[in-house]
Length: 474
Image (cartoon, rainbow, N blue to C red):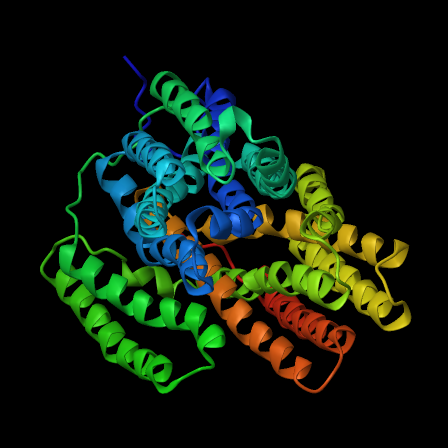
């Protein structure tokens, strides 16, 4: 019978779960698939367009269906782990992700593909928070920096694999599959992860089983949808009136959600989000920094666009040009344990400094040279290292004051901040980039977009100074 690790067990227990490092490998296999899917599907979009005769709008929905569903439901996914056990929900999420990947790969038309992508986003929302919250619970405090470093490196590895594997699969066409192969690759990985999870992962759940807050789920999901979907569509649609009407409609829905959660707590029931989380300045400040930091998602939109449309590079060359950043993203987290040991929470300041330096060198290269060269690639690798260091370190520091009973809930909030930061970053910086293009060169537009990211990192840097001065109170 599999060992159960109760939530009440202290993270610095003298008897931690003996198979925790094997469990980490299994958790990271699950964490790997979601970012891999993001990068690999982007590479496959032209092949999907040709294979399913899809329009540009339908291709956008292949991306939006996944991202929006994930962002809207990730808080609920975290809470499901708190209630029903993180191992159980991890396996269910992994099974759903694997099955929906098979449906994506076998989709006979674009509408079925979009529908399967919605289910894939739901599965990722259920799966992802269990990884963060499980690491938070099964590892002692002194081992968490190392575990989170491997977690961060997984995202770097997924970005490299997605860029390269997507192009290779479409070119090689294994078993006669073209674009279908980018979804089919998830099936053997998913089945292996499920099998290992069943035997290796410990179950961790609270001694007292809370109940699911259905009104809270409905209200928060609606509010997030009214914010995230318009953000994703706004730039592409030219910011029509309905976008702003959705934003306005989200305000009373959010107010109703807060009122509902307060009422739920007064009645002695279990809320979807315990609002007392937001009374902890340490958690709130860390979540805000995570939100700002994830505007880096805009880089992955404007950089390939600049290379393909401004410099007329082909898709594979543009994908390879991202590799210096991805390599730094992989290497950075592996150094975070040593850096944390040496400079403690100052590691986030160092990482943001590396990001600022790297993007500064990138801007300098764009302004001085016509095509990317040594300075730009060096800058991108430095920025990637900063990205890789800051992600696991900041998530770990932000979750530090959260009790184990609320680990899934807090992980869901952090994951939502990541998705919101990405969506808003892409929307705002993307709008600036394309607006500048109307009257300026690609070089100028790209430099200004990178300058906007640099300003965001400076804001995050000063917020981190404040975070480091706050006490960690549970």
